[in-house]
Length: 257
Picture 1: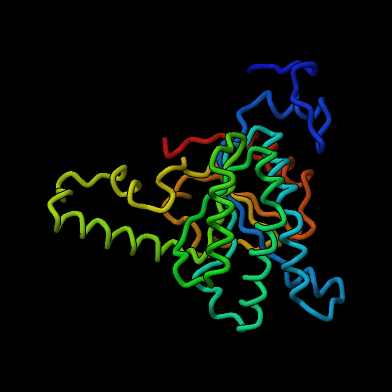
Picture 2 (picture 1 turned 60 degrees about the vertical axis):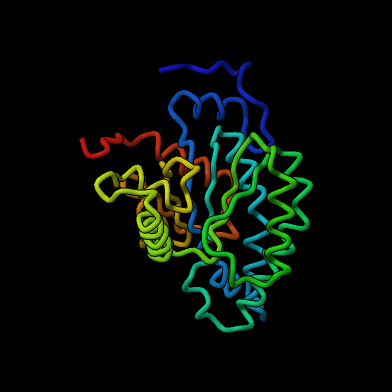
């Protein structure tokens, strides 16, 4: 066990030196995935006439959680932002979500650059409005040199669709003669997934008490530790993130051994 002195702990806007020293005594998950559930329930609890206020509230805390994760030593944060199933929601809600995404990216782009956040996405962006795709690309370009933490937004993402697209790509590669079926390994399959550039998440956090995976990173979560909290996403704080990491550090990861 390596003990980090208080003097060496990195200054944080969210955690005391003592807390950072404690958490840094044990391995911190380098990649955390989050299913940020509970926006609409949060709006109902607030007696909000417009349930869409929950989505705006949920977006408003994301940069705080990204910064807090970085302070803890997390290197990548993947957030389930819009699933392939979310198209089934009312049209007005879907359009509002697109507006939330555009506003979030536009307003936080400069802050992300300053914090060293690098934006990435997984999922099929093709069906999205051009205006949203433009904001995503602008933010990708602006944050390309970020080296502090990767923020990966899963947008129009579904794990089954990801696997389908990967399989189509692999079949195409075999038809071109670029891939031999005898040489297909788990590592080769992983290279065809949207997440090829990232390590698999070590910790999955799901808010609002729901205990299901919801078609999220089915391949990548094979040996991920799962942490469920009853806290609704708009109420999720750096303190809740710290609790999740501390709980992770108590677990023995056997990885099937």
